[in-house]
Length: 361
Image 1 (cartoon, rainbow, N blue to C red):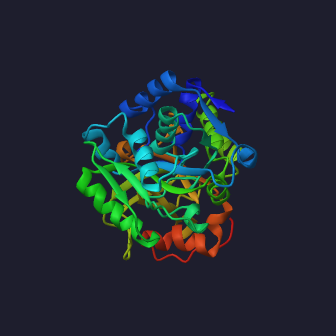
Image 2: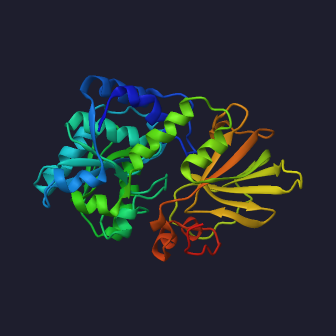
Image 3: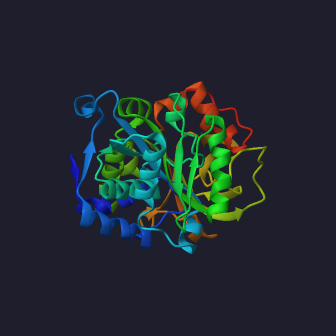
């Protein structure tokens, strides 16, 4: 399958699903840069998981592409247009081998389009998989990690062209990368998880890119009954609808955690007839929903906030008291509901003292 720039609107919209800390209803500068690169250097070959054995040999290498750091910092500091190409080439230099294919670190938020840009700039095919199936803050919160793969060696390029390479133990990669991000200026465009193509795809979440495109087609088309249609298409459920009463950085209880985000609590007055209370705990993205104090959804569930009046995703930066929000919960990939998956990306990993059973909802 070949992805042309005509797919831009669908991929952009689909990449926003489940993103609330930086959701946007219109492309920003860097998104439009990807569109221009795509128009100039595309189309991109999208390789389905079932075609990998036919197209790649056992020794062919793949790598992931993703931005690590603050999206706010990306807006404040210049983005080098050659950063994805530089990161891939530096990783190849460290490995002493060429990379044969690329995959997104995650097919949500900016990383999906960033990987499309990397594929355009390098001329490499894009694998239809990712390592998260949603947005998770840490680069080791991936099914690649669950599959025994390491994010290192890692190559990152910062706002001023600084190149950072890491060769370390898997458990040290996240800590060292965060330190490098701080020194580089708030973000790094990274090439990471170098692995044989077949191994990376086997450890990844299959069909992640094409699912984002499918969801995006719905988001940019007729959006009547948007929440229920997304729930039906993606196997999710509408948890409730409420009016925002309070947005606070102080109410949530958080234990020690590796997460870089500051805790945010959103309290909603449930608009259902029984008029209860809905509480969302946000750590970059929504990771817990309480209904009258009882757990209604929890990471690794994918918790989405929709604006049912304007029929679009909700940007938490624009959210204010009085807004009406619809909560859509989508199932994560089944690997996230194993004991190891819940340990890596469940409530406790976000500092929330919630015991999440290792079962698919």
